[in-house]
Length: 364
Image (cartoon, rainbow, N blue to C red; front, side, top):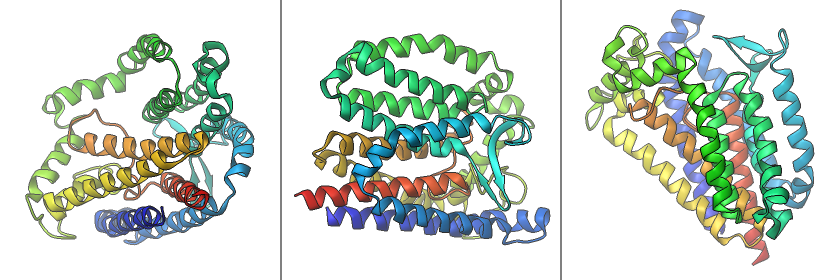
């Protein structure tokens, strides 16, 4: 397990290093033009990175039994924060979404905390219930009620991508814990009408779906961003145009240092660069799943599975969006994108994974 912990630490460190370099490359000219400081986004990213490293080491050192006892209070705090962020003049509103608290230079997104605390609470609940997980009344419904409360509040922000990610990972955790497949299938079928309304009855989401099917139908409007992403990825070829030499970051590709940083990696470092990033995420998942398979306690097994799956799913969604395989959705690329709260809590998740690996090693 010591080797697994070292491997995870090295993999995440390399991804973070790539992120630091690419954030500066993608944002320097934009930041200089808009903020008068080419280092503006890099400096803010480094602040979040420092906070994330502190959170990671804190998560690595916390006693897991203490963490289990804290699961419910942390869940309550997360729900409270999700409620008050929706209050005008308390939560910060940007582009019609109210998702952030602002503390000076720092923006805090409570849904990022809620993702971790929800997985923590569900892992604790399922490990405590044991065989009762198979029960609809005593095992399944309580989890769905908690999930519904968290997802409902996240949807009010609104943030459909995060809501879907939390739901998918929760269902995976339930399945692994032994929940009845008919219960999960029934929940999926019952959610389809709600998902249809959220996707096709909300104009901007319906437009994203239509543009996903044919971006060139509105090449100067909604389809502009994904078309520019295609151009960036296609321009890179095998070896890329060179670090710092991207043209799409010159006010062509919106969000080039956040949600679409993978496109800039493809343009500047080519297929070799994007391939290396994908391989690093595959290695991370492989090492993380080793922890889940070797963990003997149900709490550790389910929590490690949830944490690894969450990071993997967000990476898949981000890369899928930039490559045009999925409709546009604003999820940052873990460890690489300029993402603030996301980086902090992704590093916290890594700390928890390493902590679980350490406990499993000592138990053996």
